[in-house]
Length: 394
Image (cartoon, rainbow, N blue to C red; front, side, top):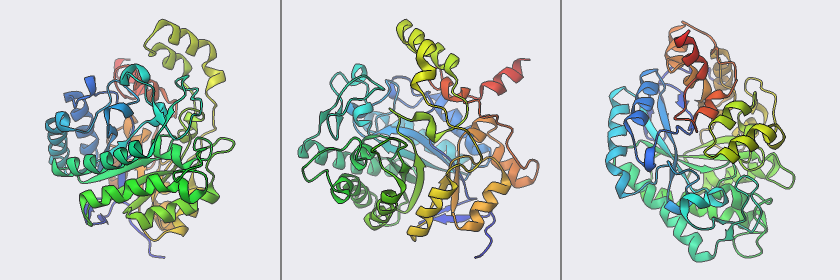
């Protein structure tokens, strides 16, 4: 197999990227009232300046009733001006920009959307302490169209790619997972019927953006819960996504309502998470019971290496590796094994210049200590490396 240089230019479909390092979608917490802000623009400008090939705007909701946060962007006419400005600024730093297309399903916040969330089946969500209304066929068709409309809009304003979020227990993942999809109609039951909705979304997006526009799809290799999606079925999901029109796949893991730190690993910053909860009751409850409600998973570099490799071997389209990318040697290993790109999150939050420093040989590994306090900071004003802030003060 040809040895691939991770800092060499590469193509993602028709899109030429300056290297093989992509900033993963990490909820920024900078979208006040759901609109693009100068803080959000600066965050992604600085990330682009640091050398990534493409940065990813997180959690762009395709309909208002799918929002999981009050300050989440809804992709529509009201967000056009801000999204265009953001794309132009990132392009000015020589990077491309993508956006995650999402619908929270039963994770949607009832206080934000003003109604009961929609989902695949009436399964209790212990993240929101609610049960969703199962979607009917008309509602499913409407959301399929909404994904296509959102993709068309962001392409028109200058985005270079879209990332359909079909993992982490969001709506499309809820239909894929036998844990949350307990339907007995055309949209659930067998693996083929559980695939129908996510596949239709990919096909809708492909039709909306044309044949050459890059569509990445984030998917789970495991939900990490009893009765959930596992790698054996995930391989078939990957093949179906390729056939539906995906340009590239991003194998990930975890279910936000049950195993939220499975996709991250490492420390669970309970104290910081409690401090940033919106109400006094939630702050007390998180402080007292957070350790019991959120499982911990030991961290190691490239922690999804084995199951992601099974997805890589099952498809012919590019596979983007995500999960514990912190070193040049790790990236080179992945490239040698056939992964086309890597997505990097915490290492670029710790130091936006991480890709540039790797490329120049200034460093070989990130000094991120996986404290995950950046995750808590997302709800406390915006994602930031708390350690770096403390170092700048001291």
